[in-house]
Length: 123
Image (cartoon, rainbow, N blue to C red; front, side, top):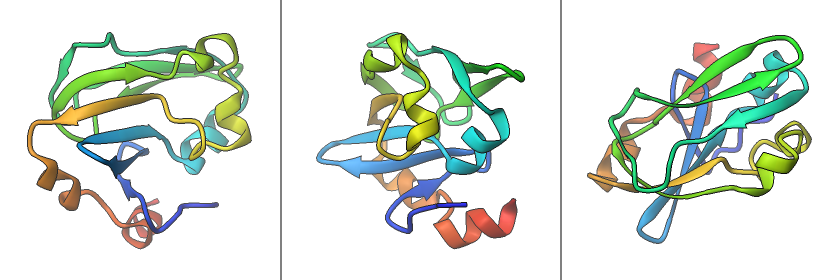
């Protein structure tokens, strides 16, 4: 599995990366591999406030559906609309194709997420 060391991870299999004053998030390689070919992604609404761990959306594959959770608390500022037409982009590279961006309530909360090594040890 590929889990880049410049990202942080939630135990619920989402990744997070700070870019400027917001956090980009998606699902991990482990999650997309376990799900199989994605066919649909339900994304959070722009402007919605999420609490860390709260369900932010759903990813559906040919095998199953799975919730995606907010890795930190904050307000959704953008969703990746390209995934609405082709959710399979995530299967090609789950780290290149983010799901949504969030403006964090407390940017330091990102530091509390798992490193790639800790995430892999948690699998």
